[in-house]
Image (cartoon, rainbow, N blue to C red; front, side):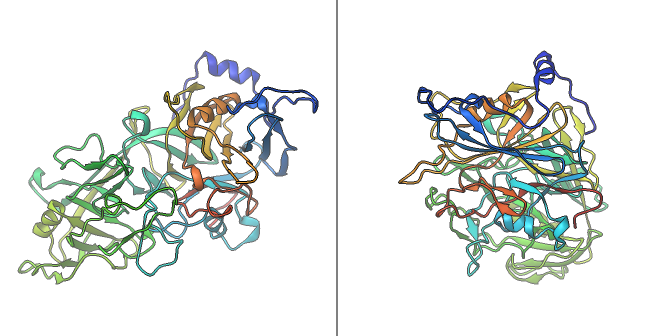
Length: 487
């Protein structure tokens, strides 16, 4: 990373006491009677034999000691100092769809020796919409926060969880991970415009206009944007005046108003509020790689001289190297008043590392995936469970230690009617557990039925959905062979 993070006295103490690899936990004799414990901690876990079959990567599976848990925990340590390794993120076939983690990783390359060694599910996503007539694994994959692939910005920043101003991001570059908070500043303006008032905010990238899953989409620095309408029961918000940009990485045709709300999480009921999808046909603009308008579509009679066609938004193939804009409400009006075939637009897309207040330099070696709650920073716990922390769930986390290693952790939470396999953990327990592993910085990723670990192309944990069936997710984080690109 560009900046070196200063560590406090606690971090220095951790540096002198940490084990090289793997992490270990104390055992207990078979005859020893231990008090029942359901709070996850390292002392209550029994480490299995570490799997070091992949150079530079160690996987250790932990289970609960007698009368502890029970738990099934996987800890994977990725050390780029020991082997040439890539550490990247992927959203599979496109941002507009979701996929199972094994499918995402398996589709990265057709060359067996270049397949990823290990991967986990990524960040939070909408996952509650699909196009009519598609298979059950094609839910919308709208990721909740900054996504960068190969140095290209593909999804905008959102509010942070737990009251933080910006969402936590996992930056992956040169085989190492860096955890920070990122903000984005997106603008659109007619090319050559003389009036600064012509510039307008670009509200988002590669997501359904008007819909804000988790109610975190609105940038806290936005000015003059109509407030979102929040539904406190479902966490779905709407902003009925937006302009959204779609790139080829969306992976499918632009969204229409015919999208269906069908949650992939059986624990989330479909209510009138979760069905919030703007039915405004709005205005749609196709641009080539130079930002020149090649076509535009208006559900109303097109403006004289615009050369736009009459038609609804959605269902268009996104041009390679170009983009498509969809506007609704005031956003549609803004585009309609300024769009003509052969007219041009300028776009400003800036990303800031708010941890240091400096621009994030984007280059082809950088990958960023959106995270959830910040769990650890500089060895200090950043997340504490509320007074009523709620149920224990499966968890996925990504962290870094003082050696520059990346640590992947999955905690199963399977409750079989006949046999409890693993009880999961709260986020507070996860943060404390990561600190016991001598992790310095850590972020909570999507959990529950999304929690997935893939080891050497095979599912290595026990998901909770439909008898251990993998849930389609928005993206994944993985490590694979280095030396030259995997693609």
